[in-house]
Length: 430
Image (cartoon, rainbow, N blue to C red; front, side):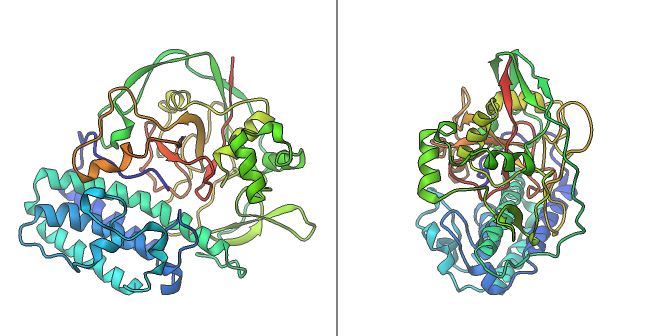
């Protein structure tokens, strides 16, 4: 799943009361808009254990505000339905028993409309209590907004996976006008900073606890590709025996390929000529744009492609040191409830596509930074306890809400997972 909700590191320069409440309302409205075209059946089904029903996302993000803000900080607040915390707690051990994640698709009740009514109830209660909320509660509202933005991305990627199982190839939204890009120029290599650099959250604004503490790392001379890998370049990898040549793959990756019959990125489909010429997305099935970034590839695939290309994946420190000079809101991000799609690179020099479009795999294991301490209480559980067996991704995707990503943001997935908008930027040693 997308980077998990964690504790707030800092809220310096936090928005004032009016801006904070407006942000809360805006985030909540977008979640409803993303699910507006779904039927109750669409919002209830669960296509795999890694995914959750859309209805569950809508209710879980509401449970977060009800539990950690209203229940804990508003005297006299009554829980909307005392049975529902068991249904909509995710993995907060401090909050007690909960429904097993793979079973969330069995929740035919409550209905989608009841989940919407739950949202409206909690929003109204929070807005009525807003003037009297202590600062600790307002910090949790800020955390809850970032948490819900994570679930907005998950809602989209989980629906995409669900709809991809349907032979009718349904679309969440109509496809926007199709403008295929032209093949970009060959990759140019941009030398990165070397020597001592600082990475990690700098204390200004919001961050999750796993983004800090800020610390020094030492970088050897290296270069990053100026853009991410395209569908056309990935098809050349396939045509060159990428999925049939064991020497490109890590041992675990090669076992994963063979056990699962992997032949191409997720959601690639064969056209009438038998070639990989179609792709399935939130706007249905369409011809593939070869100039657009490849997405929905696992760490195993990303590493194999890098090996085939005579390169490697960047470390997260290399990526972050380069990204610090770029605007984290500049990219193809989620702005409104419409079909999302990574875009071909725009002409230019220097590093491009650092933010938005696709999450970029790094070769770095998801581990704590020096001096990391998980926050106390239930909201501190989410990040630290997952620091095992996963790899870091950077930059956000076209399904990430604009403004949610930053240079220090650490997403993390297991190496076989690829239902998110995950792509590849290459690196090499100098």
